[in-house]
Length: 255
Image: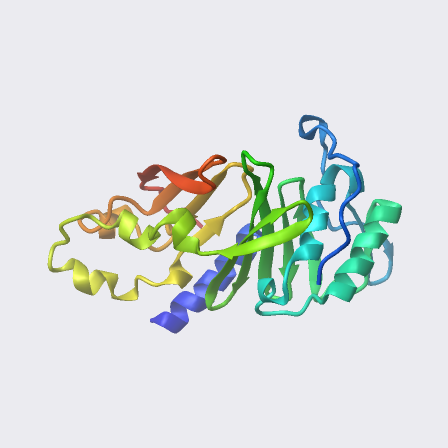
């Protein structure tokens, strides 16, 4: 059963697409996010096998800076070394675009001021930032492969990583949160395959996070065991935590 779930999860993630330290930053500030028009890529074929991928440097500088700060552990199933990231960063800084030289391996799905998503071979990798009340950032990376999600969380401030953070400290235990308090006996068998690969994580919103399994945990099958199959969290900039907004049943998408 686990192998089937793992394969289906990888297919689902690909279908929806989405997920060393630099010197101190200059005083250049991020432009007003309300006026941004981020360009989703890849775009504009410029030569056989090469793509010109547009990323506005000024509009996306904060997230670009953060990508340079990330440790190797943020890229758990692939390698994106700091030297390669610096070369990529400088190309964007100079040109407001980068040239995708290996379209079979690394492709940009989207790049916006709060989040970016890349396809890595047959997986997905995302990075997202959430601004706190003291002007630090909670940074979440999500390495999505066939065996589920590898989520890493950091706090960054003044162009430095301050610390890594525990998922449950910020979100709580999402599996416990959707379980009914008094589980009927028959739920034990139903929840045998209640594992990470069946859940999808969406960090694309600038102040919300969604964790859901509507494709697997359907209301028809699990309504006697769960409060819902989807949790919507809102980020609290003061506590630096994600608080439950609601738990609900999301309908299964029809093919």
